[in-house]
Image 1 (cartoon, rainbow, N blue to C red):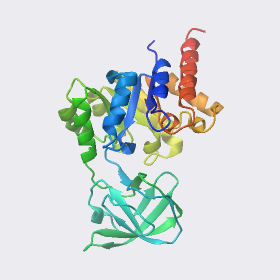
Image 2 (tube, rainbow, N blue to C red):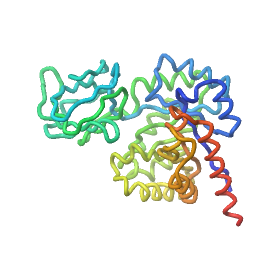
Image 3 (cartoon, one colour):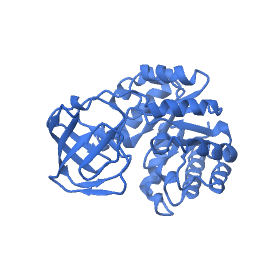
Length: 331
């Protein structure tokens, strides 16, 4: 039986040399740099520190991918219900009057009455008009919430986005020059997306394709054949698959990928409680065991190690779960 792997996302909570060395000592296999939350100008410093502490072979660049996000907000802004606001497709600073979204897409292709969801359980807007001359949408807030920087945005209508952003391309090319050979591609929708990134990273690089959309599930057979590994991001997937169906989707993805002998990693909410608390819930412990029992090859810690208070303790708990899971086969 192959020992399940652990991926940790690096962020403010885990970027110190002391923490990185401790995480490596605890057996973390891959250290993930999330480009959705990493400034391109700071990437060289992040990579340099990781190379020194954990080694180049353990670093993975995770792309932004085909995902709309809010631009920078100077500070959190609470937007009240029924407020009218303008939405632009530029990378400027968002305010209480204007929301800027990136990367580039045809914003005028979004029709009236379309709903726009910002973050998870956050602001919901409804498009009420379009300004074709100045290329912006006019929307009404139908669910109040806080506007924050870099939040994922879901439009309740199909819009076309490139599978790699300009930032992704620059980050990948820089990483390759530094000797990095592990990459994760966000929001893979088809085999064509994989072919595009392969032209940049080559076929000797290790590629993890992230399943976060219904299109990825529909095209799973081809995707799992073309990639080195699959990663189920249960958070972003829940934008298109209802939460009560996520366990079924996870089981299906793991079972299908195993037929092609493609390893599967599982991410999101594994140890959500431990972002703030020292102990997980029983439900989280059971989720980890069930995920391993389904045949997951590895487990991914995201917010738990990037911004959580207890990154080392999270890894130690996963190790205990993996150890007990392996023992259960010999009872």
